[in-house]
Length: 124
Image (cartoon, rainbow, N blue to C red; front, side):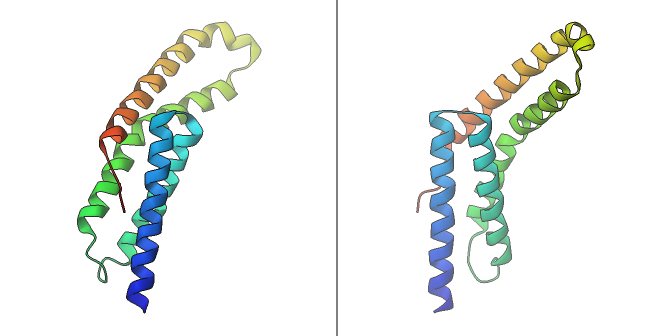
């Protein structure tokens, strides 16, 4: 009985990650990136917790690769949002070149994450 529950839970989390991945690939944005990352983190934690009960090492590695593929995009977003929120009106003109450069890095990192996640699958 516990094995069936575990199999169903793993399948449910896998479907959730696949849905989050598809949504992000269809329309990459900050919220969908966050959804992929949080869903993946929850799924990876589950797989690590039940590693001795379920043969999931290959799947766990795939989930880790998905997280690694999104790291740069999330880091760029966080840095950009922090800087945007800390620049006051008097510093706006001075900060603009840096903000534009960070926005471009965020776009490129998000594009790269999207490309990587397009090739990944988490089918049930």
